[in-house]
Each structure stands twice: as C-alpha cells, then as structure tokens.
Length: 372
Image (cartoon, rainbow, N blue to C red; front, side, top):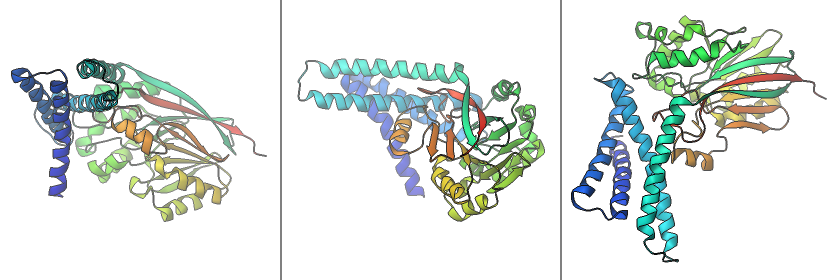
C-alpha cells in the first residue's frame, strides 16, 4: 500500500513537472524565469494534495485551501491535456518542417489552456440548469410521473451550507412526485452533531417520498453516519432492495458495493411487483446491462437513474471516460423496455470547474404508454 501511494504521488508530481518543462522549453525560457514556472507548478501540486486531505479532515483555513487546491488540480488536468496534444502536433510537424512551429504552438497551447481554465471556472460557478427529460414507460399506471434527481452533491469539509441550500431552493418549486438521490451525496460525516441540518435537506419534499442509494463516497465518509442522517430526515435509503409504491411503481436501489453482484441484482428484481415498472437507482451506470437483463427475465419495464461519471467536467479524465466507458451521459436504451438516464451531477467533484456539460438538476417526466 505504501509503495502504491509513493508511486502514485510520484506519477502525479511528474505530470506537473512535465507541464512546466513543456512551457519553459517551448518558450525558450531559462534562468529565473524557468525556475519561477517550475515553482508555480510545484506549488499547484502541493495545494492539490492539501485540498485532497482537507476535504476529508478538519484543518486550518479549510474553506480556502480546498477550493484553491482543487482548482489547481483542474488547471493541471487542462494544461496536461493541451500540452500532450501540442506534443502530438509537434511530432506531426517533423514531416512538414514549419518554421518556428514549436514556439508558436506553445504560445497557442498556453493561451488555449488559460481560456479553457477560465471558462471551466465560470461554467461551474454561474451556469446551472434544470434539465427536463421525458421518458416513455410501458405499464405505468398513471399518465405521468415527475421525478427530481440529485447526484454527486459531494458535501465535504469545505462545502458552504449556503451553496447547498441554494441548490435545494431551485428544486423546492418543481413539485415532484418523487425525489431520488443517486449517491455520492456526502464526503464527510453528516450525522455527527446533526450537521445535516445546516444544508437545507429538510426543504425537500415529494408526493410519494424521497429515496436514495449510497455511492462510493458514502462508504469513504461512513455508511452508518449517512444512514443515520437520512433516517432522521425521513428519507428512505434503499440498500440493495425493492419497495412497491402501491398502485404506482416499484422503486429499487442497489448499494455501490453490489453494483456488479448478479445474485443481489437477481434478488432485487425477483422481489418486484410484475404489474408495475421498476425505477432503479444505481450510482454507477455500469450496472445497466445486468439490470436490463434481470428486468427482461422477470417481464418488467425498467428505468434506471445513475450518476458517478461527472460527464463534461475536466480532461484528461473526462476524455478517457468517453473512450473507455460505454455509458457516460444522457439517455441509453436496451431493447424496448429498458432505459437509463445518467446525470452529469449536481456539483463537480474536486475541481470547481466544468469545461463542457454544466451541473444540473434533471427533472424526469415519465409518461405511461400502452404496450402491444
């Protein structure tokens, strides 16, 4: 474990040093100017490590250090991606020999990276959307059902209660039939001294209740405290189980640690009422294939709701997800009776930055359709 930690930290630091090297070598910087660039990126590295620690444990000036440090991480991610692409362009230029290409491309890359960082900060800070999505559902016994989704809220030691209250205020007037929390709500213990009371959870009410599942971060923060806090709020946390809302729908949810457990998945769908569709809460979208298969085997319509991907946040991780993950963002279907919606998340994780897709509160309208 110690070796893994040291190796990971070394690779991470190398990424910062690579960006500093590419800027200084590309712009022909030497002496104190080059040293200043290296010092800046080493400082960004140190701040990002402090942010990671501070988001999980009490420390002085945590409300300042954490957002600055995570911003440093986001800046590094964008700069790293841009300069790797710039290196690729320079490699191609070995065949064309365009004069001063390395110098000029470095200026362009530097400018582009700065613009991307600025936009990402603006997007995350000021652009937040209520996204309306309509999904047709076979066997839904009512004309429509309105659901509000929250995912990846990521309340940590530095999170301002005012910020979370502002987000919840946006949902108060949406008049949902159901509210679903899709995991990664907390990165810290919310139950100790009733800390959850600071964030305005009690404002959230829906006709048929508020339901939740745990994501991976609930396990990091402490499942017992998460369950205790939500129980006090009157919210139902589904722990790899199914409940039936009479004459309406099945609502099922799976623990994050079980998302690939076929036996657990089989038991969940076997317990569902065959007369109603299953609304399935799973933090990770990777469970969709197995859930769709189990729903089909039991003759059930399925609507899955997931988060986790933080689609559109910052590269290079976001780019890697699009290439290597089958499910990333939006609506996906398997056959005629299984559909999934993946949200980009209520808030970013880590860097308070969003390069492409803004944070969102999805409002899902399920419309009942007749089956042939």
